[in-house]
Length: 77
Image (cartoon, rainbow, N blue to C red; front, top):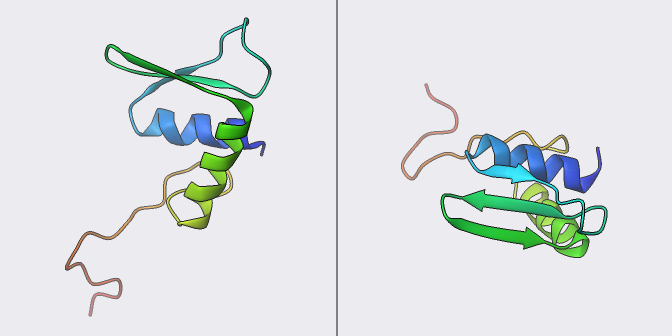
């Protein structure tokens, strides 16, 4: 999956509005949270997708990976 698709899915599953703008270059994302809008360039999209994947926050298809909260046991007895 392309980084832009994976990141779009991840951000959408986090509850953000994610779309593209025909006036922007291919590979960008426009992300909106309430009244705040941010346009990510193709380079920023690739970098953010790589970081989220490397940190184990999302898989290669953009699905969020559940992160254990503080004090949670990863292997309950």
